[in-house]
Structures are given as structure tokens and as C-alpha cells.
Amino acid sequence: MKSELESMLKDTRAFLCLDCGKCTGSCPISRLGGNYSPRMHIARMVYGYGSDVLADLDMFSCLTCGLCEKNCPSNVGFVDFMSRVRAMSAKERRGGFCAHAGITHTLARMMADDGGNQERLSWVDGGLKTAESGEVLYFVGCLPYFDTIFDYINIEGTRIAKSTVELLNKLGVTPAVMKNEVCCGHDLFWSGDRENFEKLVRKNIEAISKTGAKTIVTSCAECFRTLKTEYPKFAKFDIEVKHISQFVSEKLGTSSLKMSKLEGIVTYQDPCRLGRHMKVYEPPREVLAKIPGMHLVEMDRNKSDSICCGTTHFLNCDSVSEAIRRDRFAEALDTGAQTLVTACPKCQIHLKCSQSNRMQQEGVGKLRITDFATLVNAQLSKA
Image 1: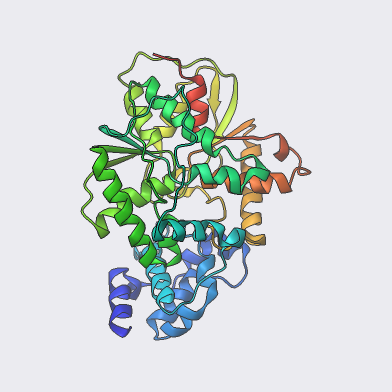
Image 2: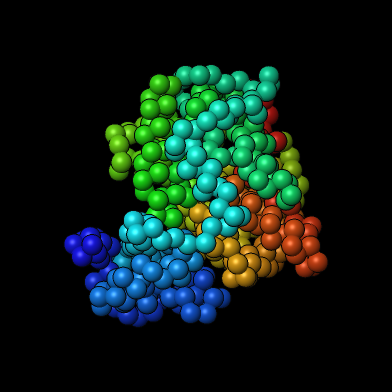
């Protein structure tokens, strides 16, 4: 344990923490959640209180959104620090509080064990062109399950999946989809369950290799980050991974396809995994800018300063999470937008959940929340 702690502190530059508090001052949880402090987690670990940190459930409140890293003058890798601390905690059979009774984590662990008979492609209808193999693979993620789990707030899980395939079809691509795909493992990785995460990695890499894919496209920011950043650390995985916004932006630049007119003001929510983690800011904005009649207005905090949707990896979701989303809704309404565009299904889930609970708040109930792929597909003409 001691050597593991020392290695983690060195690798994440935690020893260089200046105790300046800029991380705590910029952390959404710290601003609204009282005692939580990234700086204190670092300090306690550096000063030898590692066992206390591993037992502290506050660490599962961290969104790992990366705002603290952005503002750290010592470039401390707090996101990696928190990921590794949680993994160490998990080895001791400790853990945080999973939202929604832990159903999404349980589902991922079931897939890691044997996967079962998922009927994963039941959403693919006759109007969609897909294949079992090909150079471009669409990694669907857990979208079909979200429709069932979150049906009470009208989540567009399968609609996002269908819209993504339709988009690819319009761009001349017949994507491969996998009947034996399993969860990418994002939530298990960030909650510290590396054992089951690695099982999912091995299953997906084996399935992906059979498709012959050279490029993987995702419509989920978390799948994108996990496949592109984490998978190569655990196994040989040199396939190009792109978020759908990147893929569409590149293809539209060389395509004669046109967008139909859509009047109105929209604003865009930068997912922390797509934005600060992967630095993908311009592609979704470039595509939205091509829709005639639509005016994109930025929220006060956007791109690298954007605020997380308030809950990550389906861990703690509480009054602090609600307060973060309340602030975000206020920013969105201040733009004058009628539509809030997301590029990650989790953002849509959390924002729609709060929206359903806050219909009485002026304007929030009228704000349309929709996914990037769904919106763009509806406006893109067929070839």
C-alpha cells in the first residue's frame, strides 16, 4: 500500500501542491457543498493520512470534471489522483453511494460476468443500414438501457442511437454494430472497480477485433473518452476513436449535403468528458453553425470553463447536484435559448431529471433538451 501511495503521489504531482486553494475555489461541489475540498484530499494524502482518505466517502462526491486541474498552478493531476484513490479504496471493499439504487453499476457488472442474452440490436429497424463488419463501427454504449431505466423523464436513448446511424448513412457510411457489445466500463472505472472494468475491456476488444473496424464512432462522450484514453492502457488497442460531432464535422466539410432551416436560439452544454478531458470544443459548434436560421448563443461558462451537469459515473446525486444544475439552467435561460443541446446522454439524463422536478421554475419547463446527433440528423438532408 505504501509504495502504491507514493507512486500515485509522484505520478499525479500531488507533492507539488502549493496549498493555494484554487482547486477548491473552482470546484462546483466545494462552492455549493460545504466541507468538500480537493485541496484537503491532497493534503491529507501527502501528510500521511492515506487510510483516512480511503475511508472518506466524500471522495465519491468528486465529479472528476477537471475544473480544478484547469486552474491548478502546479499542474497537479487531481482527476487521475481521484481515480487511483478510488481504485485503492475499492480493493478494501469500500465504495460510494450509487445513484438510482446502483442499477447501472449492477448492469455493467452483469455484462462483465457473462453478458447474458442482451438482445442488444432490437432497436435497429428496417430503415437503418447496418452491418456486422466494416471499417467504421458505431459503439452504441448503454443507450438502449437508458430508455427503460429513465422512461419517467423521456430519455431519448434509442432515438440517439437511431439518429446516429441515420447520420452515418446520410454521410455514405454503413456502420458495423455489435450484437455482443457490452458497457464501455466508464462508470466502473471511475468508481474504482478496475477488476470488472478490465473484464469489459477484454470483451469489447475481442468483439471489436472481429468487425475489422479501423474507426469507432460514439455518440456518448463517456464512451469516447473511455475507448480512446483508457482502453489502450489495458490492452493492445490502436483503433481510431471519434465522437459523432468530430466525424460529422469532418465529413460535412467535404460533402455536398445541406442542412434544412431551423429558426431559433440554441445553447450548447460541453460535457466534461468531451470538453476538458478530451479538448473537443469546436466540432459540435462547427456543425451546429451550419444549420440555417439557428443562432448558437454561448452560456457565460462555456468550453474549458463549462460546468458539469452535476453527477458523474452515477455516483452521488444529491441537493448539491441539483444546485449545480439549477445554476446551469439559469445560465441557459439567460442566453434566450429555446433549446439546450447536449453531446452526452448522461448530461441529458441529469438535466431532464432536474427539469422534471423544477417545472415550476420560470422558463425551465419550456426549455427543450435534445441530443446533438438527434438535432443534426433531423436537419441534414439525405444524399
